[in-house]
Image 1 (cartoon, rainbow, N blue to C red):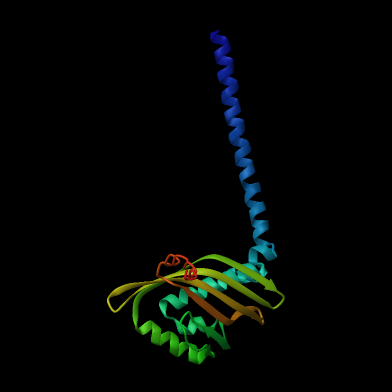
Image 2 (cartoon, helix red, strand yellow):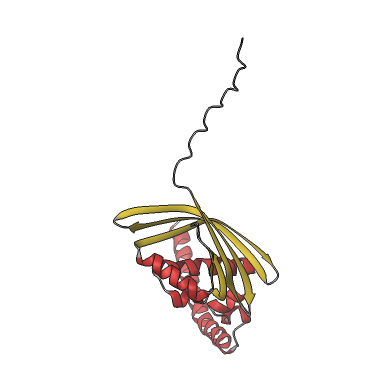
Length: 201
């Protein structure tokens, strides 16, 4: 038995030495292979920037990202960055009973006036649906908006529909239509009124 263990140990030691020699020989070959890869120009996929990859994304994904970035800048009040996503001749229909706002410059004035009245505004969107048709598209979503106005928390829920046009390689908002869902609970309908009975003589 002792002889068997000694032979096994000898063979095992030889295997370890052989393995180490193979690894030592393989390391320079692997390094050479990596060096060759470094000298090869990058493929189209690996050399694309994030912006380049976005250009290859489906239009619906680009529009979803456009809407998300626009709303992010809207929340922080960065009108210069918002403008990248809006056409100069955009039309905005708010959730209030008021005429539409026509043009970027008029929209900025209305937006800044509204923003001056609130602090800590937050807008969340959900249930977004996007439809693309050539160089035009629409996106619709539900929103929840909360802010502090006159020392009180105000909350609004509603729906927004955006119409976008592709201008060059980017999508811009040409129509922004929002509807605010009433915050009051709907009342129960009044009970039906019984028709008047004819008088008996």
